[in-house]
Amino acid sequence: MAATDAGPDARPDRKSFTLISRQAPYGTDGAQICLELALAAAVYEQRVNYLFVEDGVYQLLGPQQPDAIASKNLLAALQALEVYGVDTVYVHRHSLESRGLAVTDLALEVELVDDEQVTRLVREADMVFSL
Amino acid sequence: MRTFLNKAMKFSIVVHSAPYSSEGAHTALRFCRTLLDEGHQIYRLFFFRDGVHNLNRLAVVGQDEQNLQSGWDRLIREHQLDAVACVTSALKRGIIDQQEASRYDKPAYSLSESASIAGLGQLVDAVQQSDRVVNFG
Image 1 (cartoon, rainbow over the protein chains, first blue to last red):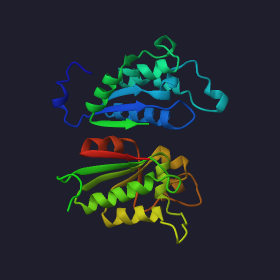
Image 2: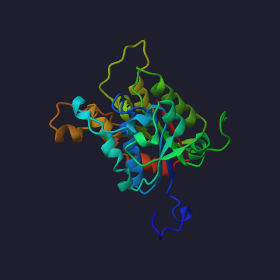
Image 3: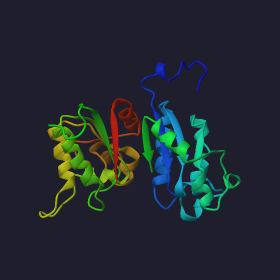
């Protein structure tokens, strides 16, 4: 957020979006659509929280070789989130660990969150999209 | 009389699913009718992903089945609603208006004339302007 920003009250049109990405990449359009929504919200200067839960955590594994199925590389696009002003990417700890994965397996810098913080991200958002 | 919510609100509706293959679009249409019957306002209908098929004006539906495409068209016209098909979802599914048909040299156009094509900015705007945004499918 810019240093000149006087806080959320200064921009009543600025909403907070929590995007919950819960599907593995490529099998359905959910992961790609969630990313497109995040980028659109960020481009229009909304506040965006991006949260990976359930099979969504598989999106963060690298390297991905989607060329083999003539698809675009989703991970490369996710790595651009920061450029669009989506600073914090959250990963649900239980989703990650129950799939035998650890934060060191992920190709993106993320913040691990527990159930309670997931609840907070949903409760405090003006808008939640779950895809 | 309102059976749900005691204060009139401004809603936007996002339809993600195609007609007929799942119940989402049908439920969305019934939800919209109920909202309007109960005195709420609909700021925008946003058709996203497979949901754009709800705006196909070329659909032919058997007489013993509910025609969802014409159901949406009727709702939009009767209440003069703002109905938008997401451009990236719509074009690749062949849901195009007259202008896009001539631009890409296509033999027909398929988008209901009561709707228009626009980008995701219209969804972000709907979130900003509405009291509630409800997703279906």
